[in-house]
Image 1 (cartoon, one colour):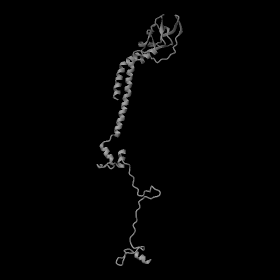
Image 2 (tube, one colour):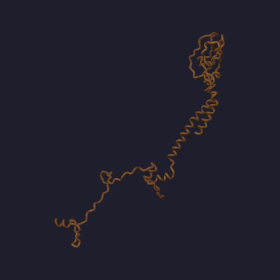
Image 3 (tube, rainbow, N blue to C red):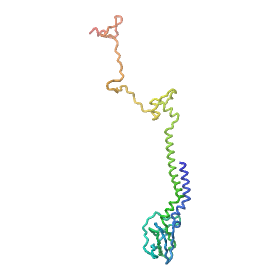
Image 4 (tube, rainbow, N blue to C red):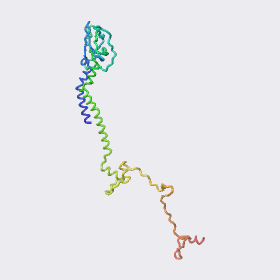
Length: 270
């Protein structure tokens, strides 16, 4: 994150210094290879290399009427085609430019430029001829410009990436870091101190250490059915038999020691 901040700061400063050079690449006054001024009754022949040539003029081009013709055997021939596309857009910080025409030159040729002006006091700005492909190649081939852009992009990538990593590490530390008091409290489900000789944790202590709290306890059921189909494992309570005289065994009662209940009467009656 620190490296991204430093790279971004350096890239912004460097870009502000080379911004003027970037604008110059789109200024026809700086990158044009030919210029033709208006002169009454005069024509100009230019030798143009292959490419899409953009003809610009400062300000408005309403007063300009320009013809572009190939020169063959010393005479004007066919009109130059204007069917070409380019990404070059004339721009400047102090003036606007108008596009007079675009010339599609397929091979090196001589071109006759004929300028006519619709007003007597107009057409005082020259026509600027720019090979759009050469201008763009020069701009893209500037190593200094690429270095500045690479520095800016590095800062734009590294800074948020570092911020994300810092956030992830902070979140991880908050989850796994437990204080000694939290560990001691989590080991005992009843919030009591553990004895120093206790080595293994109980199930409740492990559950609370992982989950942070104990589950709600359910009431103990007294009559739980047996898990086996052929055996009954439920605890059985023995029924105590009443003590007293019985017809199945000899009586221990005597005349001096009569029974306390009426069982002897029942026996006599039966």
